[in-house]
Length: 180
Image 1 (cartoon, rainbow, N blue to C red):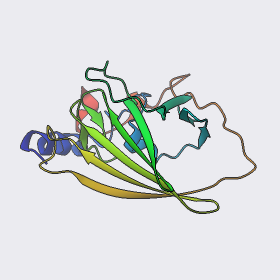
Image 2 (image 1 turned 135 degrees about the vertical axis):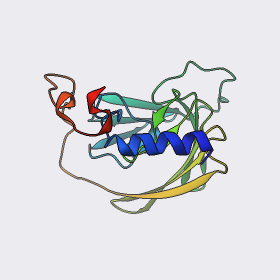
Image 3 (image 1 turned 180 degrees about the vertical axis):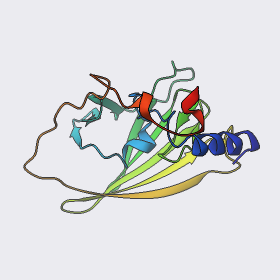
Image 4 (image 1 turned 120 degrees about the vertical axis):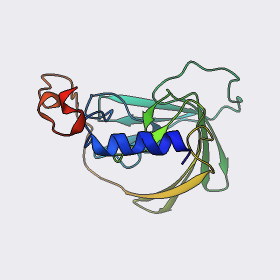
């Protein structure tokens, strides 16, 4: 990590997750969503893949129509994603993320300079493997990759999960930043 990112990570760790985007009922980045506790549903059309997420009723669009990544994007929680098929693997590039996001539950930072590459492939019936590479030179000294393995959840439907409706947990969280 870059020195400032290591210090921010330490502060977030010391705060015991109080400032986590999920604790504040905010959307999560694509890199974090794959390891989410909430169900996701993937819908594929010829021109796009849309990922529906139970958590905060979020959606993500991955354009497959051959367009390039834009030069300048409005920073958003899910970023701007394009994809292309490399054999049986969907390769997705994402830019345009909001600055100061949480990459994971532990508090690793993600900045507006991040470029996320996901390699999504179906290992067999009922299993996906997603290799997520984070290239964020503002926060990290080199790109790094992690692998997430997912299982199909058949015969189920997505439900609404709106955490900020009647949310009362945040004021009761403890840790060094609880007094703030």
